[in-house]
View 1 (cartoon, rainbow, N blue to C red):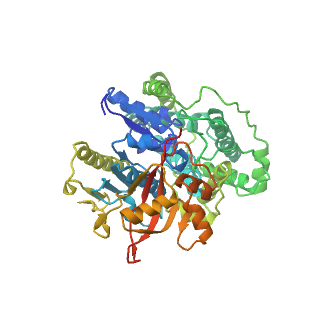
View 2: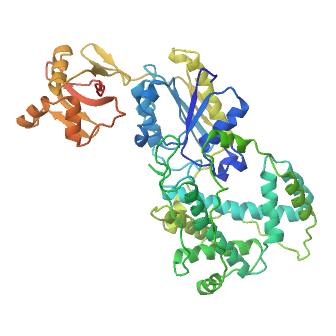
View 3: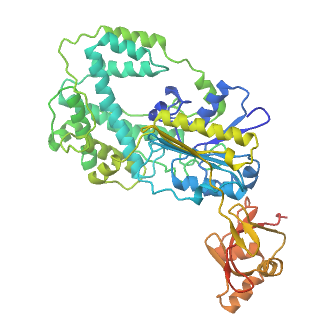
Length: 565
């Protein structure tokens, strides 16, 4: 997109640490900022002439006042990067309605797929039914959760970060300090700084010497995860926060959270403390403890510092802020040098032994699923999501498939190949290719998109891309007469959204009353709500019979409303 064109990108999610390994435009300092703003700023640095506009909205029924007729009519095409069938189907319906090309794609672990949808040339995404979703890609589960599956994946990632990765880092460092430092410093961006900061904290600054220290660490972790972080988030985005496009920030599936208060009498709170403290103790070869009463006594003596949200910790809401942050230095070199010096002087005189933790969901004595279940349910309580018991948590956690950067990059490349064809204006079906790949096999398949199914009434053929176009002042009687006189079709039923407007079996008095109404008046009367100002046309589903009283399939009706005076 040069100066004469425009790319519009929208995403309602914030960047999480787990995104960094599989989404290429984000850096560690972008965590907790809006994905769309950061991505837009990043590509502007790559190509300053790019004309790109970032939004922060979910695309769905609740934002149709933003993504309205004017918006879609000005588009040349749409590219999807969604993670659920419901959202894909919605965007697909909009593209069919506005007759816009759609590049649909997705990944699931090592598998990837690309589908090209072109008006009049191919079927739509919704024309063929995907199998039921049995697993959730990890890509977007942790941002603004609204399902227990989301909080479980968040808890699983938390487990990996706190116990698996950190125990591996400590063990590797103790075995070969110079080699570990050399490998870590060869990494890009702020990753070396973060790795060495965490390592210094774990080995020098806050290394536990007994189980009480582990309980203290777990209690402060609880406070940070379920109270402080949520308080900071609400400080950044209050309940009444409005986005730059005028829509409510906390809307749709984006649930507004609330911070929790620690209660030693709450079993879930103590379960988290017990699991977290025992896992930390296991890392450092400290004897573990399973006595609830003893842990409750210890945790009540932990001093928890008061938390005050900081205005400096904010999520950028403008492109200028995002660009300024993106231009920040890759790492604090002076801090990095101090960390290296401190770690090089570390002397393992006590012969510290680190146990490397690997996730095992089927061992009921290792506290792994205890931690994940408690961590997930506490986060679910933050967002008022119904909790899951241990068995359900184990079932769901075992099915989650993480996103893989290699698959993502391959699918993005395949989408771009089809985009080039669209830009070049090709109209032949055989020039476009759908794709399916599985890097684990490895296997790749490229095939022509499927042409749309054709139906017919009398001698007129039509597909999902066709419709009846009506406009002007029109009553229901006018519509019925138009079909009968111009198309030789008898209207037997007419509906709009979930409202049945007309049916041949209605009582005579009701039919007569409705036939006299204008179409706009009819819709508002039956649905009992006003048509929103941004709606410029109505969509009617119609059932018809031919002159022989045989039912026939016909397209839907698009009725353009008269301009408001």
